[in-house]
Length: 228
Image (tube, rainbow, N blue to C red; front, side, top):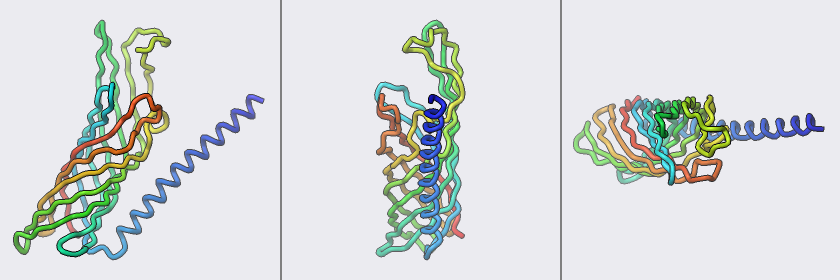
């Protein structure tokens, strides 16, 4: 009987994982279709990003990372345009939390995700080859993997509330939601085919699956892109 229950639960878990993977694939396919239909400008973009995960009653987790991807721009009217695309993010964090008696817990985390911006952009030309611009709007962040290695020197009993379980975990499987919606603003400069821009995003969705406290991810970034 227990074996049948175990097999049933395993099938349900596998089904839920397949549903999540299917949703991610459908979103990526949608972005690919948008980016390849009648866009006026395509860009290769590379940059640096600095996300931070914050929550009430917990210490903030800061990440450093890079992003790389393609964007597409659709001209509207009166110097306005719509900017979208798909950008792969790789971020890293090495967080140390200290405890009494010189004990500590180290959280070493690598995060992989895809950003899908849906931004409205306004450009102001200064000359034939130079313009400044501002943009704003939502960004959908899709988490792929967030592998965390936890190393602990604590000597607490496992039943103690302060005990931290060491090991390796994918945080999306246990603690974090994969989908994050952010809203942001930014600006930059375009010179000929080169563009440099920066911005800041604020997370709108609680990422914490456990509901013990709300977690949000914000962050700033800067990037360089090339029209092709």
